[in-house]
Image (cartoon, rainbow, N blue to C red; front, side, top):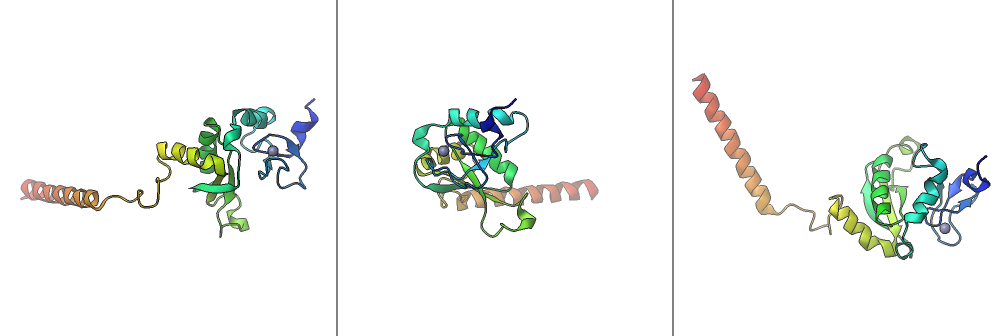
Length: 168
Ligand SMILES: [Zn+2]
């Protein structure tokens, strides 16, 4: 028989305590509660405590800030897993404008982490090539685009030349 705590439907992603469905936030950590066993049916009982053990308390302080966007829930969970490996707790929210029933299962997600975990989280995501360091750094330098275009034009010219050689 399972312990009573693990049968509770909601857990705090930070301290892994269980709560009733009426609760929305952990009173201690101020983290939005998530469904127990939410990330998979393989190990629903130990999952939340396993997560809580990985989380570094210094990354679990402050208000939630958005660090990344994901195209869907599974991508969001993938990113969450990466962050958790670094000890950073995170929550996902449906991106604004997509919180309608059609998008409940699919649709883009925002990834939020506590303020103190935002910087290390961005570093993790940067290394994974998931977000630019800042909006400007994400753009491809104009020179690289010009060179790529030049290479493309040269390739097309080559193909055209080969074509005329072969079929002439
Ligand atoms: Zn908590």
